[in-house]
Length: 417
Figure 1 (tube, rainbow, N blue to C red):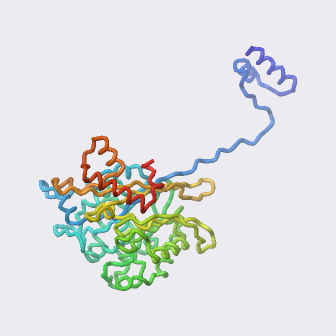
Figure 2 (figure 1 turned 90 degrees about the horizontal axis):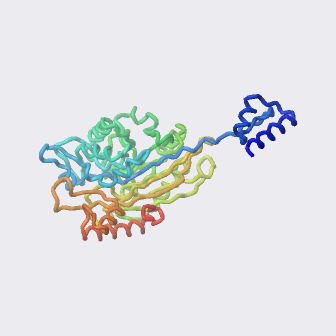
Figure 3 (figure 1 turned 90 degrees about the vertical axis):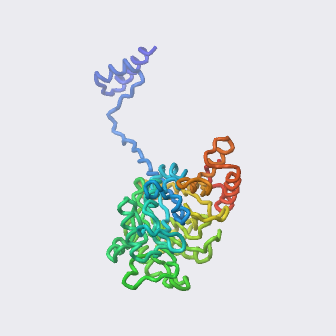
């Protein structure tokens, strides 16, 4: 039957006057399903290039209170090690194309380390953040000047020595003027321009000749904290647009501490930043969770666009004790997709993973503070395989998970599905 089919095909091609080579005839005889090209030229089908898909992960305030410093101390060597505090978060952050957080302390060198109200942390904190998977740290926040401008400068030196990118503080006017203080990151093939600002410095003021050191969005940053610096911020945003990055992201320290809802000033600032070109806004400072949302705005170019803002991540690691608010945090996972043909980049998925800062004061130093994935901790306890969670902390974590879902919405916690 196959031979007859092949002969019929040959006959049809001869009768139709199609020119067929000897090699093509032989191929048809051995494979009756072969396609022989005619001498008619057709346009070849083009294959659309696949989009670029990347994951940007973000966390909250990296802090170091005195109990954390004590927990990090390694008495046998006289050194410090914070690696255990990042706990389960390391597993998730290692999967990111890029990860960011707020460094809410300074690294001014020892041995006089301190916690609240004027932080000074061991360099090992930054080392652990790097080991956990963070790529960029925002350095503009209300504790930035806790150890004077020397603390600002040394912090940047330490981050540079570790290969950790940073944005928000600067060692010179020249450094601030470079790209208007903007850091452009390559996130899995997608370029994102990062800016970073704080509302103030806990009442401290910078000398006029050192104003370059910190990005501050309020003109009255040492007093009433309500006079937005449109000139500086708008100039920076214009510079960010001119860089031509695929997206613009703003890390910002704002809001009221321990409040779970953003205030009107936060919302007005977010709206203004979106109109000036921001695509993503990452908020911090309240030390508790505040929700996220996607909004549609018309930018200053008259184009309608979408923007994403999370008003507060809460603490990432800290020693704050309020249950469950200051111990509850998330890692946000944003999927960014770039259409290779149009060049347009959009936010195509939003999800988060809830974490809880576990306190275990009865244990030796090196194991007292640990960030745990809530879902993992609950499942392991219920299976009887928990390593770190006992009956008391199990109930606290379950309460914290309910609290997290209430503030952030359960639909974004896709790990619970």
